[in-house]
Each structure stands twice: as structure tokens, then as C-alpha cells.
Figure 1: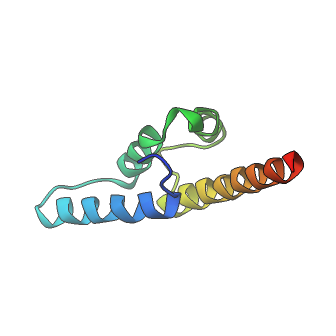
Figure 2: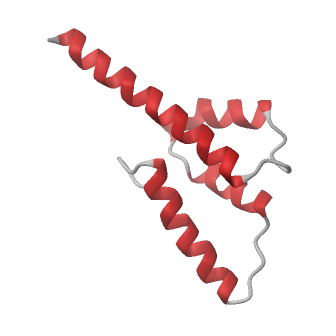
Length: 89
């Protein structure tokens, strides 16, 4: 994941890569995709990554479930940042 990149943008880029690999004959399981996304998150997301890994069976987790979870967390981070900015004014 690039700095300041949204989960949505990262996932879109990830899908492009996965689709290109599939078109070349590479088989990528959903479990592999979930693990690769979790491993691509920056260190600021380590707590969330750990929580997801501990609370879920990664081998059965869907991409949609993971992305929804990450997008929800991203919104919470954004709201917290905005609220902190308003408190400083």
C-alpha cells in the first residue's frame, strides 16, 4: 500500500495485478489474496492486521469481508483525525 493511499485505491490496484496474473495462467487462491493484502498494509495498520488475524480464520475469509473490514477501520481513522483537528482549533 502506498503512503496516503485509500483502501479502495489499493484494492483496485491489487485487483488489476491479480487479474493480470490470472490471465497469464497463475492461480491465486482467495486465501493467498487475503494474506497478501494484510501483508501489504503499512506498519500503522499492524494492530488492525493482528486483530483481523486473531478474530478470523484467514483461510476462509473472503476478500469482500476483508476489504469491508479495512474500509470501515479507515473511516474510523479518518473521523478520529478530523475530530482531533477540530479540537485543536
